[in-house]
Image (cartoon, rainbow, N blue to C red; front, side, top):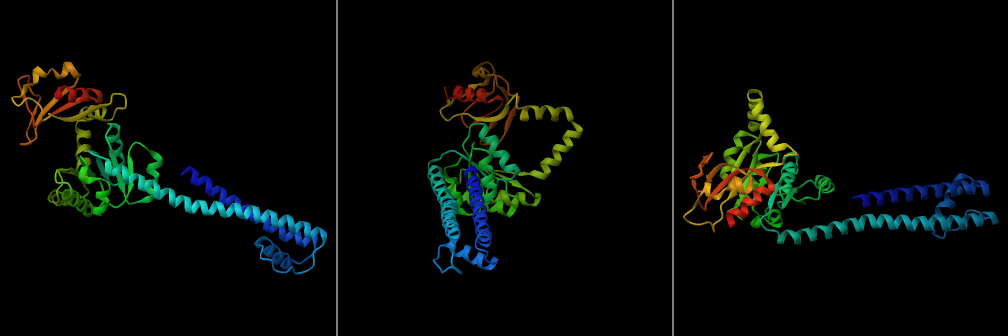
Length: 339
């Protein structure tokens, strides 16, 4: 974008200098030859354009020298301006085409990535948070100016221009190989189309949808969303908790938002290779080995959770551990469960 801005400045300067040459020629003929402004204008036009049309009157020696300098200046600046304008148009489109083609090739190879639909305030924040956790993220939006702005703003994730309501766009960004999709579009009808199409293309995809209206929750669930979040209702609930339980909410904000602590509340799946008979939670020694706090044990099949699990709680494949800790501690847990 910076190079494009510099090219645009070069074009403006070139046009400015051509205008200076034009007015210099016009008033130069008027002064040197004593011509009227009309004749001087005509002579300047045919000289700068190099059409070879006859002169209005005979030129004096000084006029011939002036004309030669005017032709040389106009040709030099004209070629420069035309090259800059042509380069600005052709190279810009070419570079965008090549960049998009390269991106599409990379997207075909991408696996287990996360797709965020809608590059508004919420979508951009989600893409950043996922990227901060070291995950592969594609942020898709149909506003070219918004996409260009975000590309300048961050290189931590892929930003793709396209309408995710379109099935072909979802295929291009690899929805069939993605691990999860979050749709945050401002219109619930569009979110429904995205969820419905994504679910058809990838039945096992984890889909989180933003509901702008409470009435749209059921529609998004019927379309295939794994979870639906009514943003306005959540915001209202959060405000109530802030006024009634300010200390608790402040503590949760510290856990989630503090840039110094960087603690994450994460769900870690127990791998399929885990011993089928299971292992007691106490024997895994998770706090001692990783430093994590185990908040709950979630059964993926029944959807039930055991909060504050005891040491005798049996951990098996098909379950997930809800833990609180740093990113590197969570990675240690993943390795511990695999070993």
